[in-house]
Each structure stands twice: as structure tokens, then as C-alpha cells.
Length: 308
Image (cartoon, helix red, strand yellow):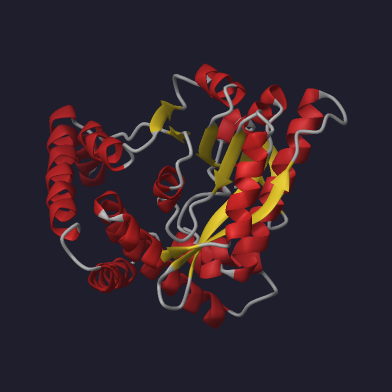
């Protein structure tokens, strides 16, 4: 057995995995306890340093640049993509430290760093007035974790779809930080989703992950990616609209809430054809936002893995 194989076997040993998970949990717990007592500008500065350290360490750097080249081939030079990549890490670092701070913020503090157009809130309430529920569909852009707080502080009865963390200790932290809303495990409780939509509730989900064998191949920046069918399926089953919405980080690090489009569950063909049509439009919505703000998405993720 080679040294590399032996090292990999040791890392995957159950005892080693448990110890590693618990150490990460303790470090994260300590960070959460400290961060919630800091000012927002201080958290932003710490996050920016964290992002810079992650960038200089080289972790995921090649994958980030590869993904950016896939998306912007022939549109942006390598020098431009390099600048974008550095800011991707900066944004991720800031978001990582902002997240634990959110539940401890007063409404006054929260609305000082998060703003929106009242017309968008009126639009959301008008959708709910139709009695069919609403899907808030977002992506890992800027500080996506603000969506849970945003909805709860506006009084929306929301459920957050989530995928269980592989670290069971960290799952305790995520549950506590997102505790203003009901959490629905997407690996177990999907039957709950349609039922809550039919009760005129709000379902929040992220639609930009690689669905692998569970998805359908649809274009994203001109290349096929495996896309989850869930948002379109839930919409068509319940008759509810989908709001494609995002948080966009501003130059002063405040975050603006933006509704990019509303998608209605029209039946135009077979179920599979309608699902593909809706999910294609959702991918287009995200692509539009990322062309405007390419530095705010997590490009180090293997979004095109199924197409490799």
C-alpha cells in the first residue's frame, strides 16, 4: 500500500472522522460565540481576511478558475477572471462570518445592512393572496443565508429546504442559526413541501447545486449541467408561482434583495417537458445575475461535474 493510500485510509477511519468533525464543530461554535458580539463592519473585515487566506492557500483555486473559464470563455481575459476569483473568495469569507451573526441582530440592525424595494414585498404578498403558496428560489450568491432571516422578519410562514450536513455536530449549529423557520430535510420529508404550499405557506430553496443522477441536463452558460427538478415539480403540483430572488452585495457591503423574475406553473406539454421548461428558465435567471455580479457566486463548486 502506498503512503498516499494509507493516509487516505487513516483519514476515512470512523474514529478519525469523528474527531475531525468534533474539532470543526468546537472551532465553529467558538467562532459563532465571538462573532455575534462584534459589529457588522468588523465581521466584514475578518471575513475578508479569511477569504484572502483561503485564496492564498490555493484551496479550490484551480477549480474556481476552470469554472470561470467555462462560463466566460471568449468574453473575459484570464487577468479579469483572476480578479473575479479573488473577490469570490472574499465574498465567501465575509458570508461565512456574517451568517452566525444574523439571528442575534435586532430588526433595526438587520434592516440597516439589508434593504429592498417595497414593491417587491408587495409583490410577494400579492402572490400569497392568491392562496396557492409561493416558492422562494435562490442560489449560493452573496449572503444567501439572509433569506431565512429576511422572510421571518417580514412575518412570512416559511419552510427552508436543506440537505443534512455530513458532520452531525455541525448540523446542530445550522439548525439553531436557521431556527426562525421550519426546516425540511430534502432527503426525507419532500411530501411535506406540496402540503405546505397548498396550505398557502412559503417554501425556500436553493436551485443551483449539481443534481448528479437525480437531475435533468439543462444548459447553464451554454454547457449542460445536471439540474434538480424539485422547484418546477412542486410548482406544477401545487399551482404556486416561483420567485427567482437573490441577495446582491453592494460596494458598502450592505445586501440588496432583488426579485429577478416570477415564473408561473403553466401547463404547456407533458409533465417532464414543463419541468424542463421551468428549470431552464430558472437557470437563465441565475445566469443573468451572475453575468452582472460574477464575483458573488461560489465558483469553486463542481457545478459542471456531470458534464466532465
